[in-house]
Length: 167
Image (cartoon, rainbow, N blue to C red; front, side, top):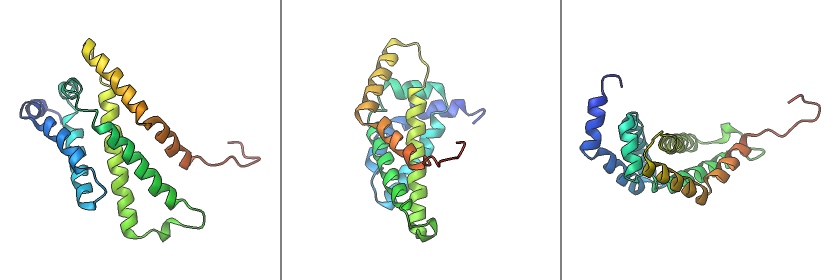
C-alpha cells in the first residue's frame, strides 16, 4: 500500500466507499455466489480503509450501522456451523469438502466484518461529532448482541477444565 495514498484517497472521492457500503447489505445472503461477492467487497473495503481519511469518511458518513447487523448474522452463522462441526462423535474428516469450503468462506466473511467494525470503532478522532457517532455505534453493537455472540463463539473453543490439569 505504500505510495498508494493518493489512489486510495481518490477511491473515496470517486464514491467507492459509498458503493461498497451500499453493496454489502445487498450481497450478504447465504447463497454461495453472493458469499463470494461479499468476500470481494470486504477485501476491497479492507484495502480502502487503510487510509485514515477513508476511515474518517466512513465514520462521518455513518456507513457502519448497516454492517453491524451483518456482523451479528455472520457471528451467528459461524457459531452454528462450528457447533455442528464440534458435535461429539463427529470428526472434521466427516465434513464434506463443500461444508469445509463453506466454513472457510463464512470464517473469512466473519473476519472481514470483525476487522471493519474494529477498525472504524477504533479510529481515533478528535472531532466531537465522530466521537458521538462512535458512541452510538457502540450502542448498536450492544443492541445487536454482538458481545454476547462473541462470548458464545469463544465458549465453543474453551476446553472444559480437566481435574488435575494445571490449566
